[in-house]
Length: 430
Length: 153
Image 1: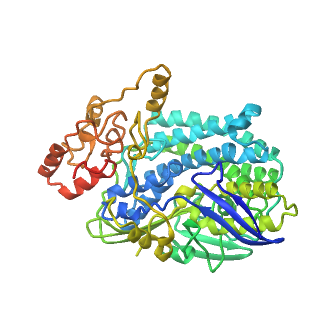
Image 2: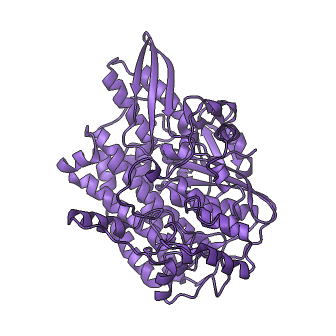
Image 3: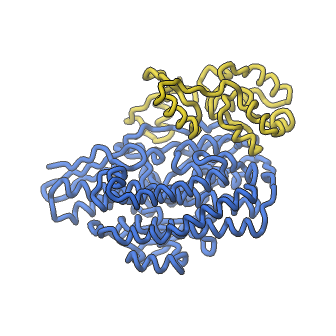
């Protein structure tokens, strides 16, 4: 028996590795090892008042702090049956788009692309080919600017509060944002050009089940309440409140991220899942770009998640600009957050974080204090699916050279854009 | 969170029996593990503070950060006081400035993410909040979210 061990996955968020046990030519066990310490955030929010929950749980992750904040607010508002204003919905969507632009730009150009071009890091890549890296950094900066303007800070937004926003952006701020977003739009062709120039990554083919928020007509990361699970021709819908029928989490010994499966099978979340579940989004420029990047849906190659992120990045830029223009056209009102009246009960929210489905579910007492909480992150949802794809990649690799297999496994891991520190399970409802 | 809490119990609560196989230690401050020469406060730190720290250190100087509370910056921006005028639980008076009163400037109460200011008068703040009818236990919990243990007990 031999082993292929990747002790530390570089260029991902957090600490994890991969272990593959070979029994002769056959693949034995395949593990995505997560060594992050258990973070046990439930005791941290238990007993906390509803106003304190989002700022605390946003600290789960600095990359997707907007996703955690807004999902937290949505869950709290669900528990208290609060309806926010249309302006709040628009601003939250824009804030979410800012994070998605930042996260996708960072992942594609600084973490994923060096693999395709055989560079050990974005810094090494920048020395020879600065174009991709400066493009990525420029778009990341735009994402940060959107988060600063709408959320009040680039990391851990402070302006989004239960019921709405502390303060809406001013017209001057929105005009500045429009200029920056217009410049960003001009870069979107370059995003597709760079993706189209990459060598193919055809080393893992597998039937894959995809799960994403189904939001027909909404085209939103934030809105929506129903998840569609799509496998070859089969469709199943799961409502937010029934999320546990989707996740079916189990704890495993080699990972502090729990594993999920739907009807006994692993599923994949993220950009590729979103496009698979909501193909009607792929119109106009996106349809043309999809054709150019030779993406076919449903895809059977997890590496296509990188392609899907690039398409989303272009779509995000379009949507962000459209929302800014709509806000400027309709005028931004100086609204106060909707008044909150806490009540005992449970609220659940599902949104689409940059890496896929994010679930927050809380139970409150009548005074608005948390009695139980559950947070399930996209990387935890993806953990079992990653292991399946690692296995397929090893099985389909005719070259038994460890370096070749190792490189492929790392490329698949990075295509998932894992956030391992997030995946470490925090909380569980009792 | 209480660092003295039974880790095995917490692990079992979150992960079930499998959790008992994980190693887990209570969270500790960096200075409890290694010697810290310079601390840039904030969760997250301000970008300008990071850049000025680098610039200062390159020039052989020790960076200097504000030693006054968020309220000072908030008042300079001529904001209405969330605490006095609206009775909201704002941690500005005991939190280190340097963020240009980021939250209260957006009419959002300070949560204290920059940690306590050097000579934080938390007992006076607690007394004032109590006068306004805000529950002491809740206030202490709020003040402890970002502050080390020992503050606002």
